[in-house]
Image (cartoon, rainbow, N blue to C red; front, side, top):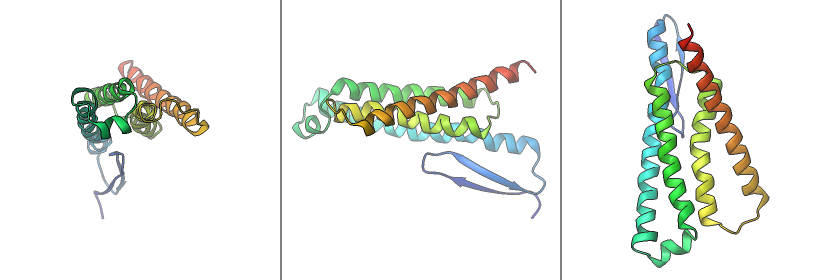
Length: 160
């Protein structure tokens, strides 16, 4: 089985692959770059859903939507944060620097969980739950680690 590749698309849209045989370096780099583009597709879909939720809550003021999303400012923040995370992932994709797995996973996880924090505070604005507090703090740490490692990798590639 020379030159074959096995790829798995996870729920968050990351393309993780393993290579068997004589895969050349350019193909491996191209396969490793696809994770950001796949995550961007997921993020844009989330942005569209949240945009409709904003229409239901802010413009139309539908009672069922206002019952779900009690704080529309945090709903707007979640929508904008998904857009910003999409731009960040797409920016890393566009520089075409292969990122290590230790940067890809935290970037993907943090890019989904950070906007989810705003979504949680939109649904539960007065919550003092330790689970939500822990989720928010872990999300911030994971995203920071991922994007810091990504930035360091890109910076180091420019020095070569």
